[in-house]
Amino acid sequence: MRQPAGARAGFGLVIFSSAAFSTSGALGKSLIDAGWSPGAAVAVRVAVAAVILAVPAIVLMRGQWHVLRPQAASVIAYGLLSVAGAQLCYFQAIRLMPVGVALLIEYLGIVGVVGWMWARHGQRPRRLTLAGSAAALAGLALVLGVFGHATLNVAGVAWALGAAFGLGSFFVLAAGGTANLPPVALSSAGMGVGAVALLGLGGAGVLPMHATFRSVTFAGHQVSWLVPVLGLSLVAAVLAYVTAIYGIRLLGPRLASFTGLTEVLFAVLVAWLLLGELPTLMQLGGGVLIIAGIAAVRADETRNPASAVAPAGAGEPDRAPEPEPEPEPAGA
Image (cartoon, rainbow, N blue to C red):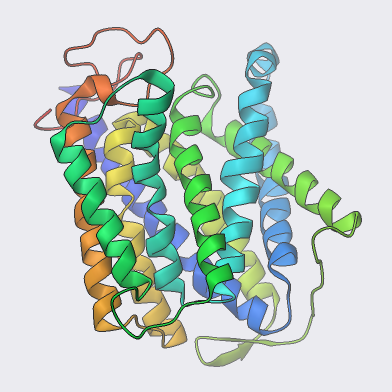
């Protein structure tokens, strides 16, 4: 049967994407610590990625440019929110707080998708979803040190919540209004939109844009600034976004976003090994609650396909998780 093979491929792609995304914190922080502004680091990352993806995207879109026109609004939203907005907010957050803590807050965006589906489509959450959301919020309180002596920068928390909004938009837009575009073309267009927006804000003086071209400290070693820039562009952007979109379309946004939680584990491990950052025990406990809460939300939505993120007019309400044919998650 093709479905199990597709599901296995989807899981593999999303996990690979999560591992690739998880390197962005350590790579970006090495540039920021060396004097780069978060805006400059993100702009270079997405601009280089857009150029790299442009050629294969043009080849794939030959004879299909008409497909792009009706989806232009979704592509622009994807570039502004899911690419430029999410990355800029995340890089601003890790400038002010540990990488692992910023990412734990960012992943609350998955719970935010539940609220969006309730408000936008009237899909009221069930008990397991409400319990999972409550657990995630309790975990956030522990991560933020509400019940302890840990202190976090308020601005850093605000930036991380902005990244959470961008993350939620990524899972909605990657599987919804842009589903007819090849993943490489969507990634290239989104990176291009994001780069133009960031460079435009920088040129207008709204977003600080400054960079240094001396050696940076990465993993305890002095390396050329090109090392983190190429890592951010090739690994944490090109590979991460393209494989994520393929994986989301194979699994659907519900199961893909749950599988994407592995990024938190990868990022904490990478930040520990490369930056020497490790959250406190209370923050780790809060992280466990956040992950458990989001897992409960995802499990509830997987059991109830009608609560999934789907374009208007989606078809069968009983077992098909998406309007287009796709592998059915095990146990659905």
